[in-house]
Image 1 (cartoon, helix red, strand yellow):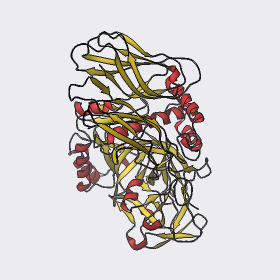
Image 2 (tube, rainbow, N blue to C red; image 1 turned 180 degrees about the vertical axis):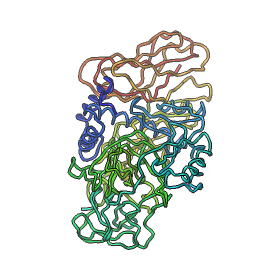
Image 3 (tube, rainbow, N blue to C red; image 1 turned 90 degrees about the vertical axis):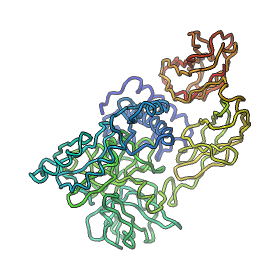
Image 4 (cartoon, rainbow, N blue to C red; image 1 turned 180 degrees about the horizontal axis):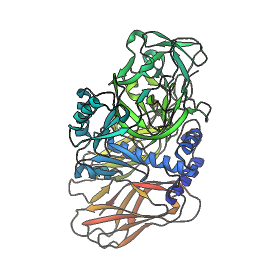
Length: 604
């Protein structure tokens, strides 16, 4: 990535630094939060970024993650269908129709309308394994951005027989694109902390991935499957003493199309499970806050016995690597290197210190080629019903977040209620909020606003909110709030937008709402805004009527900055038709603070 950062991104980065500095300590843990120094330092080094540039990149990735969270439920996204575009600083999703594209844009992401789509391409990719591909075909998988199945071929091993096999791959049609490379893939052989060396029996060293626990509190760690292929094999730690037993019973290793991951039992006294991933002396160690699946375009780092600490961007997901005599499927690629001995090592996200993978392999050129791949960790956790060790302490994070405060209703329609609340804090980090309607879970969100839909008109509903962290700890319920939906069905004169709009810093942005109400608007029009901004004093809000008349809702002011989460306003003396496009116009009048409007409504 180019080290130069656009001015607006740099300003946003400074704003983020200010916000982190002012936030409570629990909101940005020094051992693993978004502003974690070792992760940022490594990112600056390997991406060629300034500190401001690294912070801006992290902030953009977090916004993209929020957009992805909004899309995961409504759209059954396939692996690789969504990716982070570091140039645009936003999430992009490949879709095949206009209706889905509109839903993607409504969630605050960019829609790329493609011809084939990931579902059709995945079926083609599955057919390649049945062709009996030679060793010269080094891998294949779906590239959603290119709208093709990309097949890599090692030109140095492309003899006549291999050429005929490649021709069979090409014959699958225009959805396949063949790319020639000059290196062959190899699997990197190689207290219980991710990134530390371990040795299977008398074989070469490998690397610890992550400490985990099983049912009943049994103690283990994850590593690569090709390091755990022998049954009941002694496992030794970095100090040469025995740490436990690998692949107990012979059913705790995978190294095939299903993936590449293995489990080691920590059955020796004196060893303590740790949530830490070591930076191997390159930087300070990092505490894992949870796990997730990696998104294309986002920044990741890995810790290995040989390579130590390396960072890059995720480039591909759900890829298959062919090692000649066998293939491994479901792997994720990144633009950084790995070496022999790194196998099984921990891959983590820069933005929030989440575990994403176990190092699987790369090339045999001692980091000359900046590409390596890893096994997604969530697959291993799910297969053996394991719990990742996170937070402080050998048993994992057991501290619940604080209770969300000031729960309030910010708007209603005949079928929905919009809510907002003050953020909770946690010793590691809050990952989301669960909104309850009475005793029933209504929705789950990553931010501090939500809209509960599908409600009956003219009915009172009571809501509470609980915060949760990466370890699954949940807070007590917030204070309850009761809101009554508006009366009437399709004749309601309240119109809403749930599209997230990012506010320029400084600058002006409009968020439109289309009204189908008849006649004239009321002389007093109510507007409800849900937003998140570091400095409410910087903001001026205006309502623009369909006839172009502008009504002031909120003026900007001077003085010390305070966080802004929205409010309810009244535009008076309105003289305009009710039908047409109404706009909420938001102006940030000063630099160095940023935020967004996540929704608003107008009652005519």
